[in-house]
Length: 216
Image 1 (cartoon, rainbow, N blue to C red):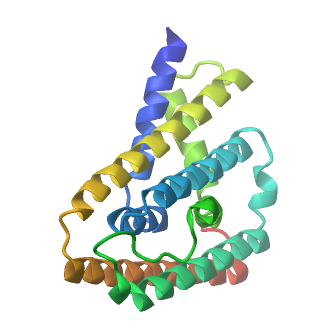
Image 2: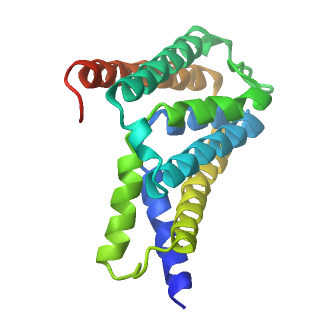
């Protein structure tokens, strides 16, 4: 019975983790609205794989390497570059939407997995979020003995929760996209491109801060 409660609680925490707007949500929204559903789902799969990787890194003892400030700064910087490229492409091609089919995207569905994986991997603070969530469940009395299989259930269930929310977001936005006329889709893509570049500025700030100051 305890593992059922743990699974449900972890799944719910995964949903909460995915709700705040970030680069992954923006890229998912952009691809879904423009009709590139397969690409959106592959991006979500890549993001979930990255989050799960960070979960295992945080709870199975290999996190110290990723907490080195220069390694951390590198991840932030690479993430900024990726977001700038995605943001600029989105804005440049925002007027080339296709009302009769799919709009252009920088990477097709085959590469979208790597895009999603790269975006989330460039956010090393996820390590601390995984540790916080697990500690929260321990304080709530849901986790009594942090055995390896308990950690695995927690990581997998929360990752599924993250993916479930992003897939639901993609499906809803695809439905909404059918009712969005061409001029509005163009404006939405421009706004999403600006948001991606805005997030990249934050990533650059984090890279510089971690490099010269250290820590969060």
